[in-house]
Length: 494
Ligand code: GDP
Ligand code: GDP
Image (cartoon, rainbow, N blue to C red; front, side, top):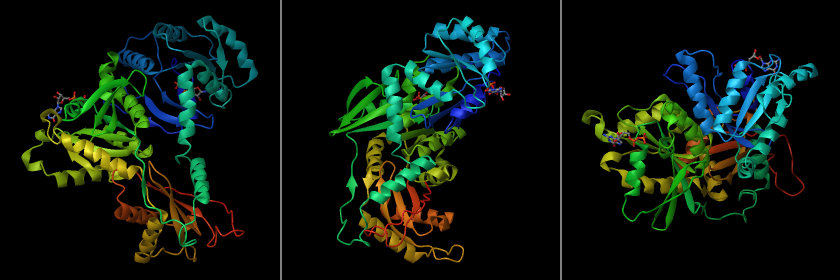
């Protein structure tokens, strides 16, 4: 947070790893950007960017930004208050500091634009804000940003900073960035050799390892019917229900237990209801969706069937896809859809066309308010979870790879034959398959897509993103003494 022009966007961009823009139809709510970040600093945060807060003006726009800032403060575990060392202390800095004091949130005060030593001379002035420490940084040049992250970790309550670091480490297991993809490729190096190269190895069956407690996020636009769906689920026969402390701060999760299987519902509507200010700027519910999705194994995207798919729905679906989470699209208010348009097959086609990047997500049709179709939801959740957490045996995968290549040869690349030698699944949730090739760079995008589709056809992978990466490997690799450790060039396709 900070007044206009102190360098918030600049800092934001420097920290950003992945961003989700929230674009709003309401005037004045266009500037918040939210995303999850994972940086070399070794911790993981969600950042909320707010507009510049100013006290003097009373125009609607400024007021709306202030309201939004209040929501952001309420939503946050910690606030970074950015000031401009070059401009010195400004009345609006005091105003922001006052807001933060009132909110009582842990705060780190930062003097930006300290590009050179001379600007540090201005720091004493900023101490008039009555804070213990003012941290000098230069967002534009990246100076002091590492210290800022350390300071944030030191200021957060212990359990939060621990979890930020831990989450970062856990996530390193899932390829998102180039470095992480490289790490996954290394894991593939260490994976057991496939049967083609060592026939005595691997005829192991598929492994399915669904966690004891499946975390399910219920996300979607305000009024789509999330609460109605949760309530309907709670009322199902044989359901044992208990409320437990939330996975995200302030949240109350609902634990459902049926037939010995536990589901933890991360109910974002319930969260929203608890926040009085949030009503005003409901679009910030995307912040909540971001958190819930990061926490979950599987997301239920509830859409208003009468209104159809909106841009925000697409955004949330994209979030789930990017984060490698399983996804089910729940079309609610099916009762409101006119009889002529009430064709599930047609509707599903349309949903998959509009959300083509998650065309693997099954589409359910329900009417939560009338309790119709609700009993299909949890069985589908289990079905999808099974695929999300399946590790397909290497031998089965390679048979499928062989068939796929026979049906459709790889085009040559730069006059040379491209060969795919074998593949192995290196991770679940989402399933991640590494294919060894002589020239990973020569595998055309369309072939990659063909392969992904073929693997889906073969193994289902219903409702889950599928990551396929190619890495370089010599033909006789894996035989003792003949290991070429050439540059790896893994590429993903979801
Ligand atoms: P915001 O309104 O708070 O989001 O501020 P911006 O990020 O848009 O930055 C406002 C201006 O300050 C831009 O012209 C930036 O280039 C400049 N700026 C941001 N950070 C630095 C910095 O570390 N040093 C200097 N000299 N200028 C900066
Ligand atoms: P949330 O904001 O996503 O939690 O949405 P709610 O569950 O609060 O529902 C928003 C509104 O839609 C309420 O007025 C519900 O009664 C209504 N609603 C929810 N599900 C259905 C449905 O299946 N059919 C119809 N006609 N209305 C529904």
